[in-house]
Length: 135
Image 1 (cartoon, rainbow, N blue to C red):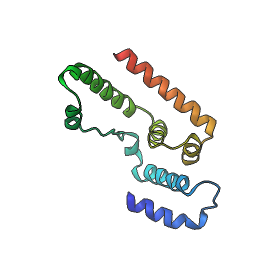
Image 2: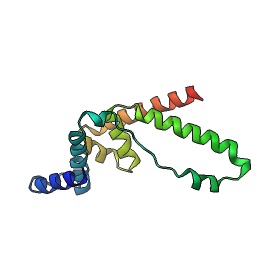
Image 3: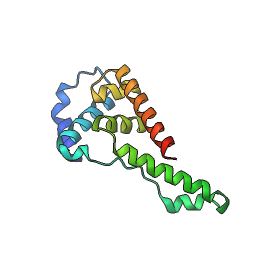
Image 4: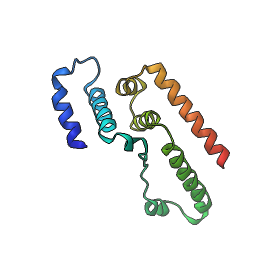
């Protein structure tokens, strides 16, 4: 897929108009390529948040063990909930987690900035509600 993204960037270089930053433009090509490359399987893809539990164990002492276990359970539940999001919602959250601004996310996804803000607010509210309910 990486090679496919690079090929699509190369093919589209002459179409870059400079209306957005080059990073946003590349993100958009990458997202569109990934969605079309993966097709239906992308809908069922999992959003993975990497943590090294052995490294995390070193950071906690035994007095913090209960807190750590609760945090890990909450983290696992968050990951389950993230994987149940729609394809667009997964893309929005992924880009938000990568540190893109709302404007950059809007340009990448191809929707308006206010729409991005509303969607992200709704996703966050939905996740909070599910995580609080499951505690």
